[in-house]
Image 1 (spheres, rainbow, N blue to C red):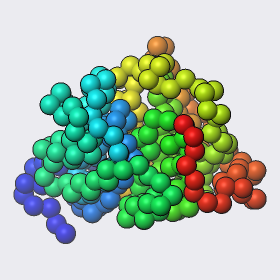
Image 2 (cartoon, rainbow, N blue to C red):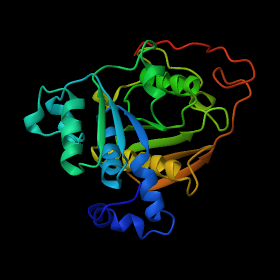
Image 3 (tube, rainbow, N blue to C red):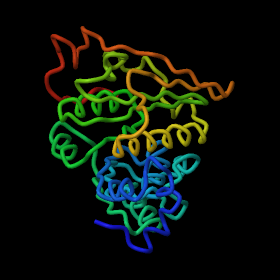
Length: 261
């Protein structure tokens, strides 16, 4: 494919970047990225993927828009209250960039549908907001052999890790297994500054774009940790765990299952 005059104008600030160029922009337009969750992390991720010209964005989310979402979930507006998030998100994305094809899944990822959905995409963004969902996404990406970027935010803080299954430190290498129900405080109770998922959803989009283009250094084998109150980032090295229950020498996680929230 070659870029049209309109696309050359739209993506001019991309194509003048040496690492991207017109060939890189064409690669983005052919790419397929799945975003699991159309909330605080998924909103900025989808916006910047669409603006960058990612050709197909898949969005998985079974929820509807609630008024408490609007403090941080910038894909949605007041007029979207009560509507499915995936529908609101797709309309917002198409309004930004008609080049983008949006494929929506108004459901939760499950053992029945996950591998079928994931196989259609080049890269996965985990934009979920619970430990149970994050462990499920990590397991599903491992079994599907799909690279993904994890992120989690709460209050002023956040973390991020990119994983290439079978090659780099995986989510379970670091966090092992889901915490027992009731052991952690969910964002709905602890709170989250709306800017925090904005920061990390944007970085997730950058990781996806770098992966598709094969440029730069991904956040693999490193956990990016951010303290919003101090304004400091830390880059923590994390190594593959020989005894990891998912990617270790003798894995105990051998099939997909949902975890209790």
